[in-house]
Image (cartoon, rainbow over all chains, first blue to last red; front, side, top):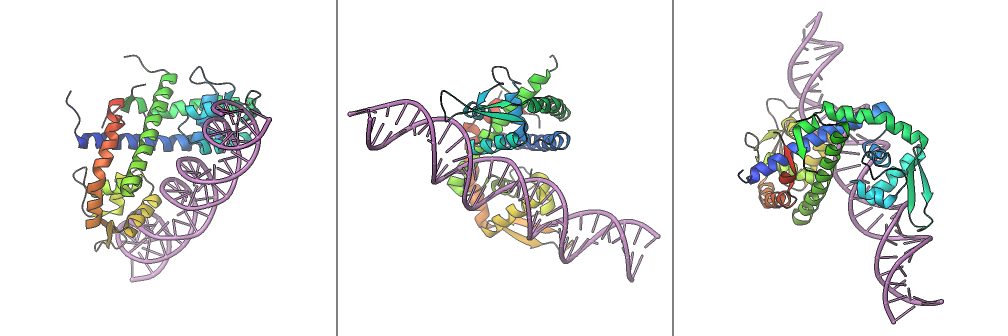
Length: 136
Length: 136
DNA sequence: GAAAATTACATGCCCGTGCATTCAATGTCA
DNA sequence: TGACATTGAATGCACGGGCATGTAATTTTC
C-alpha cells in the first residue's frame, strides 16, 4: 500500500473529527435527556463500573485519571458533581492520606446500569465501528 | 467477520476518544505555540484556504459552517477572532444582505501557509492514520 | 401588498475545561 | 531530625462552546 499524501492525512483526520463530534453530541444529548448525565460523568461511571475488567470497584483518583481523557482539575470537578448527585462515595486512603478513593454508590450503580444500554445503543446507531477502525 | 460485542463497541469508541483527545491537545499546543492559532481557528483557515478543493476563496458563513464541526454561534465568534487578528475579511453579499462573505486576507493566507506544515507534521508524528482508519 | 414564517448572523448567559496555583501529606537526603 | 523536593487533590481564573434569544433581511401565505 502506498504511503498517504499530506492531503489524505488531513482528510482522514477531518473525517475522524466529524464522526467523533457528531457521535459525541448525540451521545451527550441522549445521556442527558434519558439519565441526566454528561459525557464525562458517564465516562467516570463506565470506569468505576468496571466495563473494562481489571478496573472498577474502589479506585484512586490518580488511577481514574489515567483511564480518562480529562485533566486532573476537570476530573476533580466531575467527581465532585457525581458526589453531589449521590452517585459515588469518597473515602480517604489509610496508606496515603493525600489519596482519595472513589467508588460507585448503590444509586450510582443503578444509574450506570440504566445508562449503559443507551450508550451502547447510540454507538451502534451511529455505526461508529463500521465507519472507523482503531487498533487497540 | 463476526459482529462486535457490546463491550468491543465501547472499547473501540474509548480507544478512538483517546487518540482524538491526545492528538487534538498536541495539535492545539503546537499551533498555539508556533503560530498563535487555536484549533478551531486553524480549521477555518483550512477550509478557506481550500485544502479540500471545491472550497476555499470567498465563502458564505453558512457554507463554512457546513464544513465545520462547530455550532453557528461558536463559528461566529471564531470568525470574529480571526477578523480581529486581521486574518480574514468580511464582506456583505449583494444578493442576500443577511449573508456574510468571508475570505482569507493576505496575512491570513501567509499564516495558513506557515501553519499547514505544523498541522501535517503533528498528524504524522501522532501516527493518526496508522492507528485509525476512517471510511470517507 | 401586509402579516407571518423563515433564514443568516450576532450576542447574553451558563457550563465544562485546562493552566497555574495552593495546600496538605509524603518522600528524600544530609 | 530538619530542610527541601515531590505528589495528590482542590480551586481561582480565563477561555471556548452550546443553547436560547435578538435583530435584520428575505420568503411565503393569504
